[in-house]
Length: 113
Length: 114
Image (tube, rainbow over all chains, first blue to last red; front, side, top):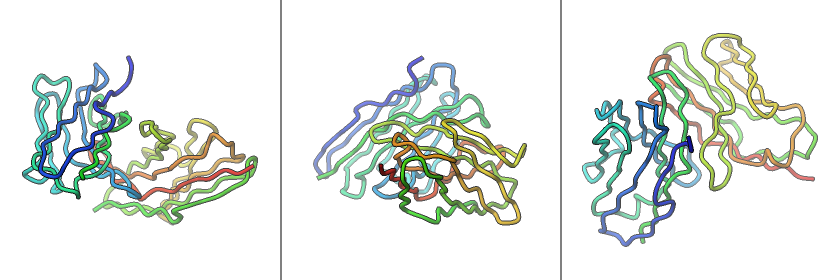
């Protein structure tokens, strides 16, 4: 088990472009979470899945954001028509059940020019 | 609504001296409280967690934290700082049973000098 993997680690894009991030959780973990961390702030909850079902979405997740976990394993987070305010570190985490501790990946850093 | 306040954005200590990182919390329920550490280019790592068992919680790398309900505090301490402790530390709160929705503080950057 290599922990939670995120790809790409860094992405630079121009405003208006679409970007997609991928997260591979720990294999036996049924819950997967996305958080966003902006400079100088703590991570903020975006959304989470239990298996393939998306159970909760934050108000931070605008219509331009979509997350999927089609087979209950890896997940993708897509941002359409990126804006400079989307520049942040996007963190993925996974856990086994609702009360176990979250294990975080190293994150995907997005820079929107 | 749950929240945490980390009282210091930056703490600097000399190697071998004690570390104190302060955190106050607010929660409508019996909270679960955590401390996570973030080293550059690495994922957030759990240091310790409190989930209504013993109020003094021991974590990894010699860190510990004490839950004080009367003061709504969960301060992180370590008797003797090491250079490798230099990192960003986050105090985190979760309402019991909803570990999915962690609320992070703004972080405290710990600097360790020789």
